[in-house]
Length: 278
Image (cartoon, rainbow, N blue to C red; front, top):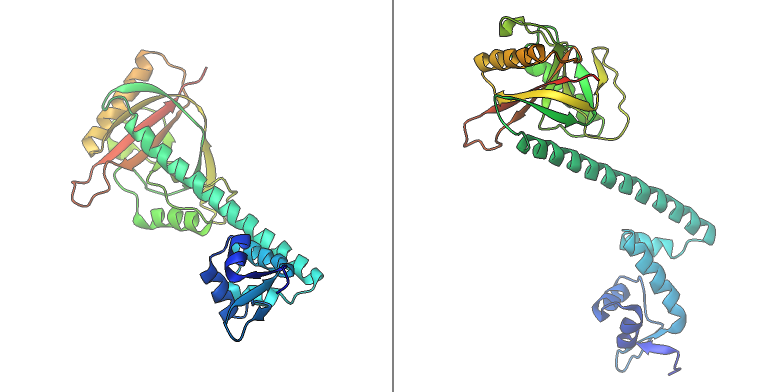
């Protein structure tokens, strides 16, 4: 045999592929030896075939099915370039999706970390908040005691239709003023935080995107009950008045679960936030 021909073992070493893989490629007519000795059934490969196995490995690396590779082997150079351009576009889209998924995971983790970082319940504290994009819905008659499931579903469906996921947190905002009882509080809008970095296309006239500004906030956090809500709001209000603080006339409310287990009594954590103005 010519010394430019290789046994299956030698070809396996040259290509860094298992001999079993080369045998399988032979069986499916993807990559066949140039010669098979009929007496010994030994397979021999030509050195000139190395470029073909390099092509197969490259296409497999980007996820091309074996059947498609068999077809591609017969492409012209022009057809091959066109195919590779399309593959590059597909990979770019997949990469963008993975980056978006990573962004969403980081945002979700950050929400949980922020919840753990609350310094104390039922007492006023100061905290720096990053800006947050919120998908908002005008919901007539929505209050701390009642938000309809239909209204929340509209927000959730819009979030998911835009290729994002629902967050563990939701909330509302409303005017900062003195309230005598919880029934007096009417939400301006309810919202779900947007975890994606993509642009959103909101078509519902009752919906819009609002940004909660970055800045220093006066906050109070507590476990929700109707009585506790108005008491904690009053404590926040009094703190602002007593300290004569210059604040934005908006209360940002965030609501999140304290546990995700069905075996634990449901408790909802509420945060009320008012931004300090310099």
